[in-house]
Image 1 (cartoon, rainbow, N blue to C red):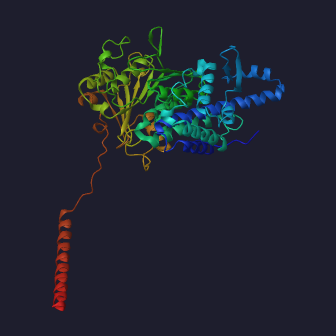
Image 2 (image 1 turned 60 degrees about the vertical axis):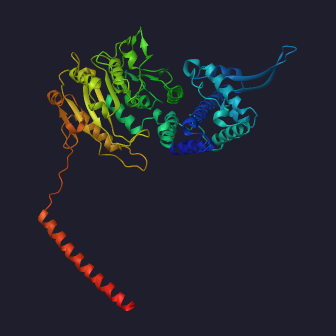
Length: 525
């Protein structure tokens, strides 16, 4: 067995493969080509690893080996390229190979290499419909618009296949654990989001923020976990890791087709094959339903798009699932629409919700204020946690996390808890050149404060319902957590004396300069 390779090596090798497109194709586009190729390389290596294992048992009995392989997690089918004779009607086999990365590498110099890659992906998708249907429909390796005319396109695709080969991205399970492959996938998504900022940031939530959100909902074995705006699936992966075993079910919905495909591949790479990830607009067409009712979940997490415009307010009044009974948010800001959906899909009397929001959600009035007041009066809001600015590639504004706990409603285990914890963690972060981040210590402090639910000077405050009501249900954190730092007392008399002394010194210097100038003028007269 080959020696294991570590996370850093495979991360660096995968990122180096991006050089094929860097500077030629926009990062928001070439991320799809790189990540799909990484996925193809991974499943090809897993297939090869299993093939070699069965070969040790059954020798060269290929038929028996292939029957065994068909019972694995996925199938890599045989591709048969044929040509039909118009006169005789007979078909001639032009080429035949297994749908793997390695078959494409052998054909990397083909004049139709882009078409071949598409054919391989189509065959893989068709043979694994239950797990991969639709995953490759948004990617075209034969696209002139994205990859250039035939000559340039072929050169770039040949280089891409060679990069994955020469960089020794060996992802066989005997060499690399599934965690490493999944982490590399998330690492690449993070790098793409960082490099292309707002153009690609919508599909990624920074790792430390996902860790914090996942910890705040505290998923347990047996839980159903949902992200209704799942992006590339990072939050779902982190929530799954918090469970501690494989006894959970993952659900998500994403409106962007390309990002939905990333999420499906991300689930597969982490061996969460059974995750149900739907492609559609959550607010207007929720697809996570059963028996014509919204599915209910133990944990609901999300980093939905901030203040989404034209989110579907015109249809909210007639929503068949009655999600917006507390009020319809303004059509130009969908924040409370997502929150309303999340709360309604959390299990009654036990479900937990954690959602990343812009600060406007905490204090904006009108319809949003009424919805916020209703949620607080229902005793659903558990905590408001303010985070530092510049944590996201999409925006430099500070954000907050709202935690809702349905076990606080009447009949729930925590119905006696009537207060809301406010945490101001906005001043504690690791400063970065382009983006700030949170450290393990910062996360630990936030979680300790949340769990202990106690006052911490200039950091946390436990506000009773009466206090929040007196503030007109405004949740702006500075109203509850006093972070004011007293300025050092200034001795005005001492300062004035210092200014007088400086003015005397300045007058003396000016007199000396005037004398020098007179001497120079006389010497030149």
